[in-house]
Length: 457
Image 1: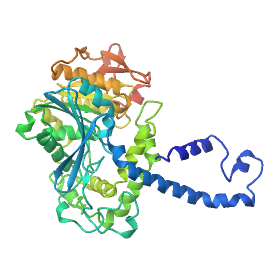
Image 2: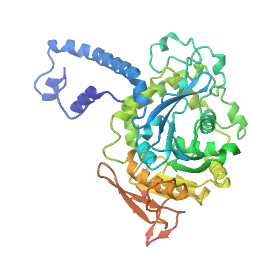
Image 3: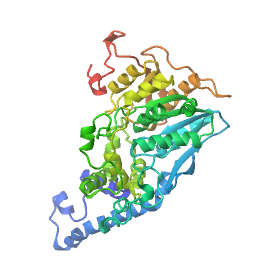
Image 4: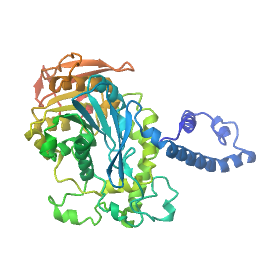
């Protein structure tokens, strides 16, 4: 992903046409490199490789600091024997209501740094937990030690490729494990009697899945769910109950060690995706803000991927079969259990386009459905002021806490909006949406179509 500040500057200079070592004469049209220049050309790849290794070492050394949210207190929980879970907590005053934030794929609790202070200052206790296989939540030791020697010196690939440790034979990192982690976290660590679950992307999917599978004793505490651009699908290997034939066609279902048959594919894909340049490009693709996501977030994600169990966890996630319930099935369970819901979607998300928000609203018509615009796939990170304002207004209406400042209500009518200015001066609009209608307010409303199509009209 990222090259590091010094190489980024060099890359920008080259792309802008600035002279580079060993090719200065060619670019300037003055002369070709003389023999004296060639040693520099020979040594440049070696120097670049050494610099890359140095950056990886620094990321590994700084990983724990990079993973800790800067706006909340970091804590650790021995969830299972051999698995330690990291979570962050923020609170200003004692509260009877907790907001538990669930992160998306590839990030961790640090992705909610913009939410800890506003929500806790409003009177809520705020938690954000790292899923196992993300942030600082990992197995305590190699779950399949003795892997190939060629992987032992590759950051992120040292664990999970050898012989299975019996203690970890049931540890398959994927949605089933994460759902159990969420349920246990709430029942064992969240002391507040009332709980709001909120999640972005994969975190939104896990929010409805965990609520659907919640035991009655814990379900009584769930007072609302907030879905921020929730992904409506996860995994590609069918669940056994839904398609036993296709399910059985894939021999590996995520139990360690990672078999040789999938190792090359998984490692190639993993090493491509975790490159800092790839991370930054991908994040900017789903971000509307012209300034992009900046360099720090990709560095943190790359550091997380350098954990010794990173590649093995990625392989497990990739090949773990789908959960028993689809997103829509789980959301129907949430509705049946009469849990209030907020659908808060970045309108310009190129992945979870407005169609999916409208479809979720069709499944949960009693939900409050709002679009944030312009905003992309991670609106809480890209447009935190707008998301925090909408979330707090919804919380104030559905789950107020003692001593909370009086807030304006959310717009009540479809098409009604309020505006929020972000810290960088951007103005965003938060609009109540409903089921798609052919005509509204004299114009065509294409809520179910991608934003780029809507913009053509």
